[in-house]
Image 1 (cartoon, rainbow, N blue to C red):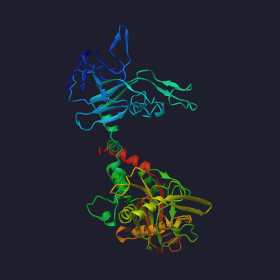
Image 2 (cartoon, rainbow, N blue to C red; image 1 turned 90 degrees about the vertical axis):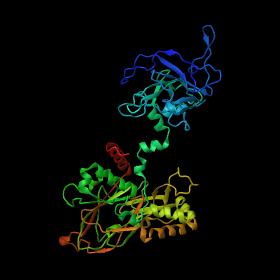
Image 3 (spheres, one colour; image 1 turned 180 degrees about the horizontal axis):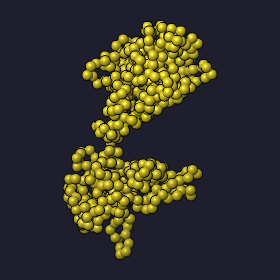
Image 4 (spheres, rainbow, N blue to C red; image 1 turned 45 degrees about the vertical axis):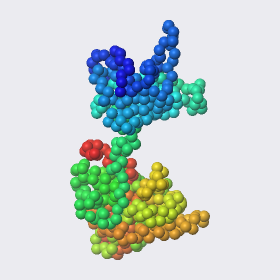
Length: 509
């Protein structure tokens, strides 16, 4: 690259709180690239056409003369910048063949300075709709970064302010009478190299948000039970309470596999319930019409099949809600002198992906056909329709891999009559999915012991229970139930929040 123009300039770092002191050194204007015979000037300036007059600069596709605030500039250590009519193209020395293109409106809207993002609350202080559609940079300068993890930052001086429109303003070509200017002319934004590389790359944004730790891993029963495998199904409650690393392990097991079991949770039935303490380790209790916590006991006048001693087939809870709870916790308080009652868990995600591989048409029908669910009992009337497979809209339908499934809705006991217009092929597709769920290699069976808390993904992992005997109040000593589980629901947002915070705290990459 050739330097077409070199001249001494005063230091260009503006005084900002927390900005380190800058050496008073000459500053050079350097052109990263070449233009055949064209004079290079900052945007917003132009050569004089006559004494005392100048012509406003116009944006064209050209290499931009970027200014540097320090004499330590090296042409191999900074990106080259190229201005396009609506975008800025940056090429970093570390990846010269992969330039990044950043729309001006995106850059201005995303400004991380204290005037645009409150330094205390970290909340954005303007609306995206406040940014003029034709906003452009007036000047670019490389300055010392305020970001402790980055040496340099790109400072952009903008050619116009933001405009805030009232609700009566409808124009987009101009500023209506109700519009008010936000800030003054020439707002300056600073973007560190790290900021630019992170927010311009979707994969790095996902890395920043720890998305890989939140991904779902399909499983068969053998995957859960394999010694030394990736799945670590059982955790000590005492250890999870004391050790952040153990808690993170249990949370990751839950999000990745949709199932974990804590052992050694106290079974006291007086005072505060320990199940609530477990729930608060993972998330926050979500209250439903069953209350914050609820009991699973065999009752003579049961209004839910779960409160009998009958066989309870594979299902999910509360699908008659618009937003069924994500996770369910079941704490075994008592399981004595009972025959049967084993819990069964099946990964419906794995079964759905198997169906996708074996019968794409059946999968598509289940992903596009609404199924109604309802609960009309005990003074309640709840009803909602869901598709059996909830597919992420960003999934590529032409991909050779199964699409990303964010949730599954399957609960035969609470299914309402299907609409009479339901496609006949849907019934066969549902039969194929049900048959896949019944395959023995996908069923993990476990008899909960007193002190166990099973935590599972209610939007992914189906649960069932074998019939049992000897668990009713009549069979227990002193009228107490021999089989007693206490349950509750929690939501996914707090689980993800804890995982991100713990990974950052423990410096997990």
